[in-house]
Image (cartoon, rainbow, N blue to C red; front, side, top):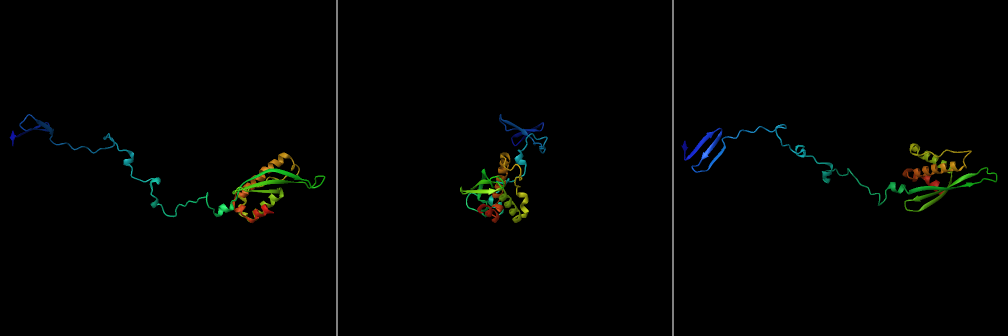
Length: 201
């Protein structure tokens, strides 16, 4: 059947268009609707970063979105603060001791410890102290800071019989050095008048 010089035939759901020449084209009469893709029927899946909602990570948050005053930085390498002024000691060493005899019989003899304190500026303070002076320092610190007993290490135990034996003296030296290190590295203790009395009297 000719309509306006064109012949159109419906063959199995396809239209064949004949323009009167040797060329003929075949195309679907009507494309059937495609079913909506599902997770099982669709072989193509989206990348996970497409499916998930867009969220900025902590590293992507702009500086302007951070509340002012929320984060502060303090440079401890230059300048000084109150805590830096209080902590003035770098290390403590107790290398030697001397036994001071009371009399010819040895009654009243005691041990003096040679102490070297290195400051943050590089200078050194040399002290000679008895065990009893360490004991006085600790008691005065506890009276001045009664709530700081937990942060204050104990002194090495006292000895009566073996107080001049090398092994006992070496253990005492280690204990005294540890005690004094802890005290001087605590800004509250190291800047107190009690500590100054220990250093300069």
